[in-house]
Image (cartoon, rainbow, N blue to C red):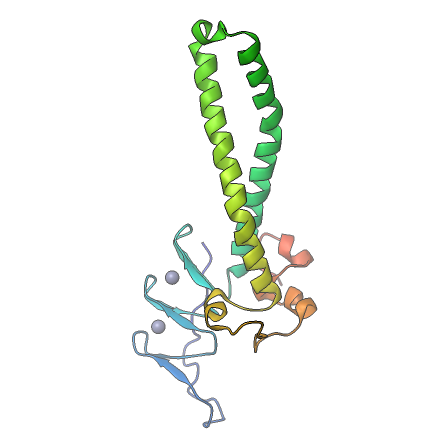
Length: 188
Ligand SMILES: [Zn+2]
Ligand SMILES: [Zn+2]
C-alpha cells in the first residue's frame, strides 16, 4: 500500500510571502499546503487528497492516485475478459440444458455449476456497468486536474485553478496517463 503523501516536516514556516493565506490543521499541527485535506478516517493530513477509499482502506492522494487509476483500469479489463470468455461457456450450457431436459435429474452437479456460473456472470456484468461511470468520472477528473473533493465544490463548467492542460497533466506524476501510466512503480 503506497503512502498517499504527508505534509513535509516544517512546511509552511518560511514561505517568504507572509501575505499568503495559509491553512492550519489543529489535529496534525501542521500548515496545510494547497489541496491538502485532513482525513478523519486515516486521522492525518493527505497531500492532494482525492478521497478516502474504503475498498483499499487508504486515502487516495498525491503519491498513489496513479495506482488508484491503475487499479480501476485493471479491474475493469479483467471483468471484460471474464465476461467475454464466459459467454461461449454460458451459451453451451444453455443449449445443453434446453436440448436435454433429463440433465436436471442426471447431473445435479452440472446444474449447480451452471447456476453459480450464471450468478458470477451477472455479478461481473453489474460491476462493469457500475465501474464504467466510475472510471469515466475519475479519468475526467485526472484530465482536468481536479480532485474528487474539489469537484464537489466546483461551479458548473469551471476550470480547475490547478489546470495545466491535458498534455502536461499526462506527464505530471499525480495523474499519469501517458506511457508512464503503464509502469508498476512510481515514475522517475
Ligand atoms: Zn490534519
Ligand atoms: Zn483516509
